[in-house]
Length: 219
Image (cartoon, rainbow, N blue to C red):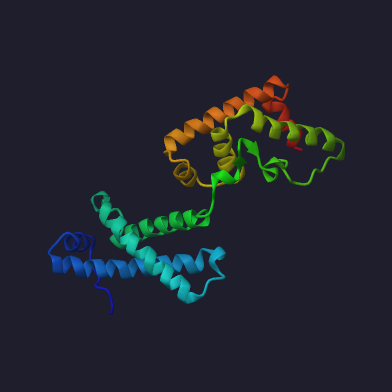
């Protein structure tokens, strides 16, 4: 069934109107958002190329359901600067991006980083694994990396270490780390700030200034 073409004003009126008008508008909106999300999944997400078209279609349908609710929750913020469907589709795609990101780290566990206060062997590997182009710096860089890893274990609390390792080294999104740590983004920001400050101070006490390390690894 072809969705009805509506003006911006008609969309708002129908979505906030009588039960019959609202039901029809919601169905049309869900259909449009599903198409927009499906296009995003099939054309802009190469990491999903291994999924069958049917799987992507089902994913788009599921995401569209949530997107309709998100659009309705934000209906008052629509100012009419663009087409309503364009505005709604942007919300839907942002929701898809967020959900896919969270799904990627669904099995992520902060407990895997430490055990009984000790670092796991896999977390004590050097923080940089890129090829070293300058052979005479190999020993010096290896020593600095060892001292950085040691500082991570010695200077930080377990909670600071978990947060810094997850965000700065593993690249886990802030919202995922905050959820796993039962905190919020603002509290996590402060935790990371304090962790970086303590780590920097600990390294500087050993003569490892930020400028020195940037020069050493900036070749």
